[in-house]
Amino acid sequence: QVQLVESGGGLVQAGGSLRLSCAASGRTFSSYAMGWFRQAPGKEREFVAAISWTAGNTVYADSVKGRFTISTDSAKNMVYLQMNSLKPEDTAVYYCGAKRGSIWSLARLYDYWGQGTQVTVSS
Image (cartoon, rainbow, N blue to C red; front, side, top):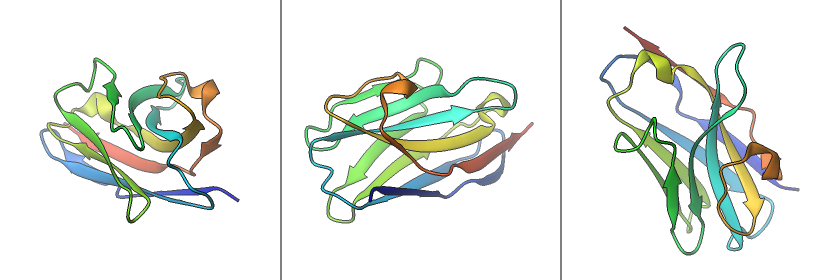
């Protein structure tokens, strides 16, 4: 059974940094793409970044490009999201997702989700 567990969220001032982690277990993820999404109150789940587990190809939402970096550690089955220069509008619950095949930005294409971790950026 696939399990994704996020951690690393918290409260940070604008301009600060956080690193989110996603521990993946339950299968071999070499043929999977991993994504980070976020959801603010009253809004739909929004794509943040995605990475191909083996090829390392990445894609980012325009709103985070240049500030966030997604990466994997295959040996540990971990996915990370390094978030720098955080803004109040980055405040949301951040979710880790996994999907078979190539990277994609549509949440509905992801097969598995974690429970989410709250990120709050104060102004």
